[in-house]
Length: 354
Image 1 (spheres, helix red, strand yellow):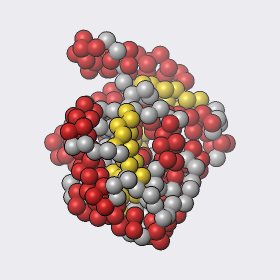
Image 2 (tube, one colour):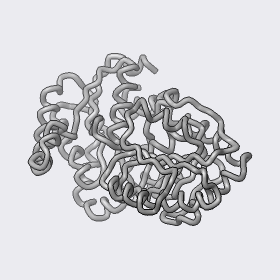
Image 3 (tube, one colour):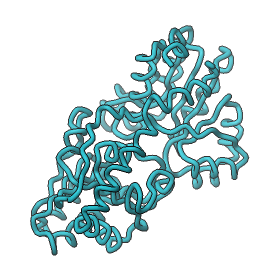
């Protein structure tokens, strides 16, 4: 596969670390994989981190500053790439998709990956703007079949090319029987319903008083959740904040079960990483998660916000070592679909390198 990419100029337009979130992580993973395959990679950061560091004034300037920053980066590096791969999302996250069309004048191949779980709402409201933009791309990539169907319903053809997970970074250990050590790893934001995790854990502790819950990630709800833990005297809960990339595999290795409570989702990297590590997964069925997790085979699904059902699924795994081990082993096999060896050839087709 390296022969396909060697010497090719590819620009990745999207957020990059230290910006939190799965899209920035994915942009950095893609850039690293392409570089390792011999491509000449240009990072065009849509996040304007130097503006964000200016506090309140930076927030006011941010939208305008992002546009100017992206445009300048594109003009400065345009001789270095022949493919521009844009990573966009809904609402203001769609701005890079619009701005990147200016690269048409440089005879660039334009590819876009659409992230996030709000495509249906966004296209219903802003389809009159988004559809003409997306149709000017050479290739539109969606991450899941569910998202592809949403796009098709708005007359936009797409190819399904999922996120990449560096599988080898997550050592596999088969689990089962399980100790009640739970890991929750997302941003502490309303869309991920972190308070549900505390409610679930409270129920688990009624029968497993030694249970532990580690909640990793930063976000706007950190103080509120910490206060709830203190108020309800939830012994065994640790809010450990944002994790560095090196610390994430360690967190998976220290847990026995992964819990996801999100209300809006598409293809969460954390579920793939947890599966790669061998953790049995209990998750909501939000968005396109059922495209990733098959109930009873690679994880257990429950409706969004159904604390009782999610708690029951965890208790089921704690009491059924055979099922836990089955989900652990099947989960690792499922995660291997997202390795660079599997996704790289699909991207080569999207880039018209083959």
